[in-house]
Amino acid sequence: MWAIMLMTSQVVTSNKQNALLREKRHNRSFTRLLRLAQRFELAAFGMVFFSVILFCTIFAPLLSPYDPEKIDALSRLQSPNLVHPFGTDNSGRDILARVLYGGRPILSTGFISVISAMSIGVAIGVMTGYQRGWLDELLMRLMDVMLSFPSVLLAILIVAGLGRGQSNAIIAIAFFMIPVFARLARALVLTLVNEDYVLAARALGATDSHIIRSHILPNMIPPIIVQASAMLAIAISTSTALNFLGLGVEPPTPDWGLMVADGQKFIFDAPHIPFFPGLVITLTVLSVNFIGDGLRDHLDPKLRNI
Image 1 (cartoon, rainbow, N blue to C red):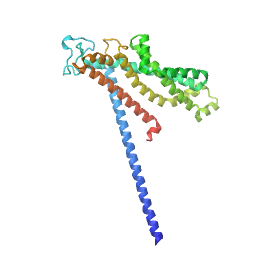
Image 2: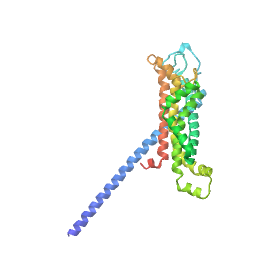
Image 3: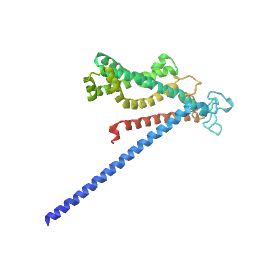
Image 4: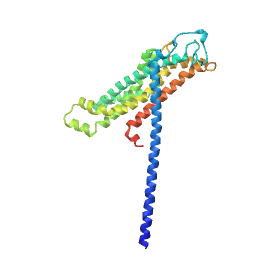
């Protein structure tokens, strides 16, 4: 009798434990789905908004009914209305047209500087990480010195030395991003050179160039892409800051940073002048960051299991 009661209690306890385990697994799966849905929504928002910005920037001549540089003294400082949805600035220029055209110098500077820095930085990181030796020590110490300066301050110093202009802004922004890619690429190479497939390729007599081209570079692509997306947001912000300070493109070229700088003088009388370009800058940087977070979550197997 006691044995039957003991067995019954053990069965009941086991069923309760199994039920609790199933409930925990269900809750964990539900929580994971919520996190994935949240990440997907943010990444989707970033992708859609950034695609819209790119489309509007590329096809600005087709979308804009006004010349962004045409001065109309009779229409100056108009609030948003049906004729001018974003209003006009202190020179009577249509703000919507200038916002559409103003993304061209910002986005082109960001893309070109990131691609340039990524190409140079990855080349330095792969060379130093694979060969090691005195060249590795020399270049990495140089990278440390460059990283010790605040990025915006370093960009300002470079542009101040080279002179204002979009090309010099690209050089300045790419310069301070090179150490980031070089450090990341070197760390990846130091990890990958000890992998079994690399050791096997070396044992079979593969050359260094073949190992780098076929085994190391392909496995570096995901983290490099994630880093590039993060640096693109920084490049856009820095380019805007340089233009705001008057160190980038020159007036009357439409530019978001210049528009905010010009509009700050009328922020109380005509707040719409700096508001719309500032809003576009904020949403653009946020969308790029959301895209980078989505790429990181998708490409990193550790984060996919959270």
